[in-house]
Image 1 (cartoon, helix red, strand yellow):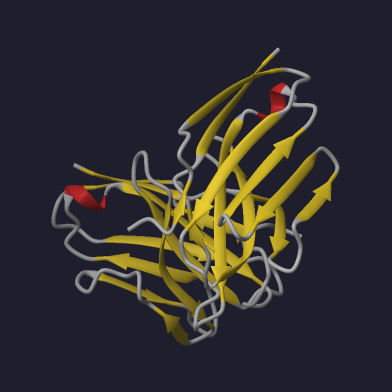
Image 2 (cartoon, rainbow over the protein chains, first blue to last red):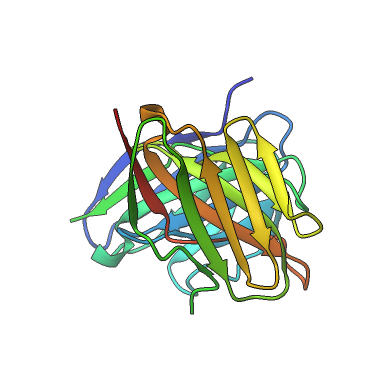
Length: 114
Length: 113
């Protein structure tokens, strides 16, 4: 049973370009969460999605960031017009439910904006 | 405003001794707590959890203690092993509309052989 998969593992973008991060949840998991970790910081929640629905995006910056979890295929976190402050590790997690369950994390995508 | 605080950025312990990692929280709505372990270049891995109806949960070498009145929890690892060297994150979730966990900043544990 494969774990949570994220790709790419490393992504380098110039300022102003778009970054697209992908996450495939564990088999059987329909709940996906995106987190961002800045240097020396903890994991900050960004968005929680179920298939075709955004359930909670309270941690998502209002501009340039968007997320989707289509009926088919991986969840995508999209960052438009990246800036240096977007450089961070982005982690995806999945769970079989939402309440009182631990989340299973992917290895993360390290985004570097030059 | 940090609702989950891990005030020790790092901890160094000798192999075979006990490691105690601490976590404080401020939100009274939190009633479920988790510990994750993270190695470099990997995602966090779930370690152990505790519900607020309990004050202790044990799994092998790992025990989590919860003191609700003090809004404090701790993770005990005994005996500590070099393979336990990692960053440990405390997380808390609760009722009141959201079960999404809030994470602390982590404590880096180094276990010396």
